[in-house]
Image (cartoon, rainbow, N blue to C red; front, side):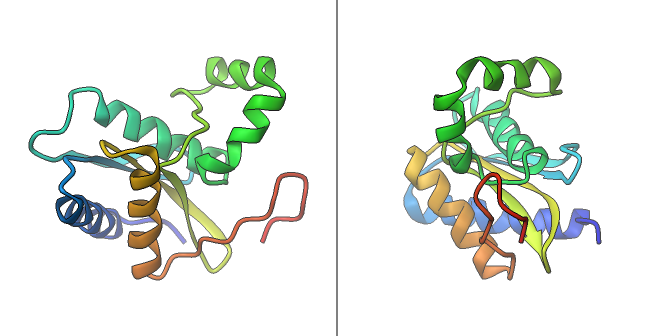
Length: 147
């Protein structure tokens, strides 16, 4: 199963709409399972750096196969190794809120990244939109069987 442009656009539209409800100018990015950009949008008034941040969050969530907030403890416990990941990757690997892996029927389809709100707001928007659209938000902890 692959994430289509139509599915990515549906995710983007839902995310930008949630941003409007929060009164936040957001940027949102969707990548495929390999971290390749499908689409990115920046709402009116979103800060200039937010599209790049959203892409990094989406990329990280896709290639690490975990939401970016699950990467935080790993980054803290092994900062040298974690920093080296970014030198090997096409985009920085980030360990913060606002990047969620897109998964359906146990299969990783890609990543969603949001930037422009607080970290908690970015995370909330990702989770609400993906839940509403029927994607899974349960991920095994590191070192455990995927599922």
